[in-house]
Amino acid sequence: MVARGGGRTPEESTRRGAGPRQTWAALPWLVRTAVVWSACLVVIAAGLYLLARITLLVTPLAIALAATFFLAALLDPVQLALRRLRLPAALAALLTVLLLLGVLFGVGLLVWNMTASQFSELGDELREGLERSRDFVTSTLPVTDEQLDGLVGQLRQALSQQEVDPVASAQTVAEVFGSVLLALVLLFFLLKDGRSMWHWTLRRAGGPNREIAAKAGRVGWRTLGSYSRGTMLIAAIDAIGIGLALVLLGVPLAFPLALITFFGGFVPIIGATVAGAVAVLVALAANGPTTALLTLAAVIAVQQIEGNLLEPLVMKRQVRLHPVVILLAVTAGTLIAGIAGAFVAVPIAAVVWRVIDSVQQQRQVAASRRRWTRIIRGRTAQARARRTVRKV
Image (cartoon, rainbow, N blue to C red; front, side, top):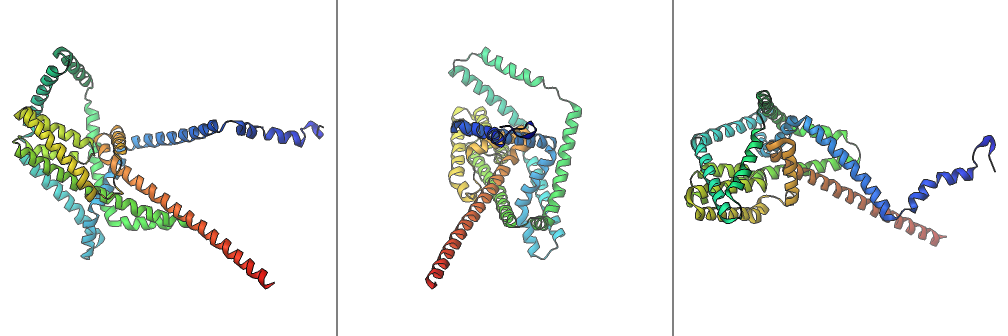
């Protein structure tokens, strides 16, 4: 039967409209699951790609913001102590920033006076250590001198092909200087008005989202503060431990090596590995393989004590990340923003993970409350119905 105007009957329209749904339902569940997950992964990958592209365009700003939050979390106790002395917020923030600059300038001047003449010697020791390592490789492994020299020559040729652009170098220096200046200005305002800005943001959030955002913000800030202070303390302990071991073993340039260990401690896993390798190479060049092996044992012992004893005590459990996550975060940060990205990648990953975990926990608690509320209301309604029946 054909409807008026040459159209389809309602039954035909219903059957045609239900066709795609019936086709989808007829597919095996494994295929449907694969299609849904593939679509989700495509959307997530596209979002991450867009985020990475935007980050690359504003890399100096992103690094400045990350450094600002890192320093603010590190210096927040100092600013709060000054505020307890009834100092105005602006004066307390200014004194905190000046204290940071004074400490950095003083430590930098001290380190320069103590190590400026030794860094050239460090380069010579590293070259000699590499030569000894080369001799060890050629005498132990089935590799000839010609093959190893060919590999080294190819590496040098690849590096020499990267010409240095004076304009690009000047632009990089200007970007670094601008990022440092911007970070200091943002640090002052964040210490001065950070809490009021956060409360202003929370007032714009309505309903249950305000409580979720407030708790997630507190968790993220505590995580960043714990990470920044804990990382600095652990890096200092590693530098002192390895520096003392180098002094006891009679390895030259102990202070520059301890300084490299301290800065390497801010890049988890990779930084400690590189700093330990440099110390072993210098020990090999200066005092031979026996001292190098003892240095390697000392580096491993200090790192094991730090990882298994000090880190659980200093770092809160909520701040710790799996080594795979740390390696991925450091690699991604290095690819996006170089050395600066490697420094800030892990704290960003820790804060993001803790914020997401806090939001999920709060939503689970809210869902559980709603479920129990429905159960209690249902039981109350049943009890009222039973009382009504009894009265009747």
